[in-house]
Amino acid sequence: RERSLGLCLRCHLEGEVVDPDMRIGEDLLEHLSPTLLDDAARIDPYGRPVELVYDGLPFLASRCAAEGEMTCTTCHDAHGSPHRGMMHEDAGSPRLCASCHPEIAATARAHSHHRADAPGGRCVDCHMPGLVIERGHGVVTDHSISIPRFGARGDRVAENACVWCHAGRRGAPEGVPPVSVDALEARHAAWWPEAREPAPWMKVIARAREGIPDAKDAAALAALIDDPSAPRVYRATAPRILAWMGDDARATLLAAARAEDSLVRREAVGALEELRGEDVDAALRAALDDPSWPVRSRAARAALAGWARLKENESLHEPVLRALVADAEAVPDDDRRWFRLGAAREITGDTIGAIEAYARQVALDPFAHAIRRHLETLREAQGDE
Image (cartoon, rainbow, N blue to C red):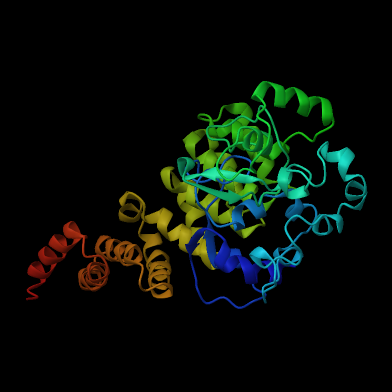
């Protein structure tokens, strides 16, 4: 299953490439730092897009993926098919969902309360509706494969299927009778009184995104980090949000920096960059020798952040430089990596090496005017015409 997901999501998961040299069968998230659920500009707390993103993150936040072990090839044929979206079946066919939900498919009319030949009668109409993105300029299919929810809280929340359809939003089926939101909510409560509540990890991320987490939220986020039943993308989001709490989250973040899951470790190490102290320096030093390359890369960036830590702690110099060299060489057309390497070399006294790295940066970024001027200053100081 992991091999199958890695094959698809290496192109269909939003994120920064850490190491492009991936062999199928390896953990994709050892080669990619994904966008996570703290990103209110792109995703809502329940894993649904609010702006244009690849389908990988919503899918990895889905219960169908996490609990049902669904894969991309459950529905799609990578080698092509006569159906739209390279589906194994037409998107309206109940057979795709019936393979996991036969009891619901057998009583689809009673379950949906819509005629099978009308909008709302197909599984995808309610569970994979169109989500209006880009402030109304586009529509994407909901690959979190969720259920319609009313009262879902959060800083940005994608509209549910019922409202999308009956309010005639962009891309909704034509000819659907308009129904007010209040009436839709009442019918939803009457028709599906046992509809599942959002998972606990969804609720805590939603609460935390509405403001600085309080002590109750911090405890819930710490529990989420250690919850093996939660999807990795939720567990890895928790350290990012805890970083907003600063020193109040120190103990939790230091513990998370030793978590078994490398993605959680990576995000916890990154969250330490704003904290100071010998305990944090020790955690970063340990992370620079982590068996996971993305953890080492993130630790180097965290140690460099703000310059002060690297200036004051010489024990970090060699491992940080080693990691930043590897980072730049892994993706040599990324100007930011050469900038980090140049800054680290300059801080540690290697002016010639800094010049070399900054030169690589400005060659890639024609708008790096400040660095270009700084590079000229360094060259003049070295007597390099």
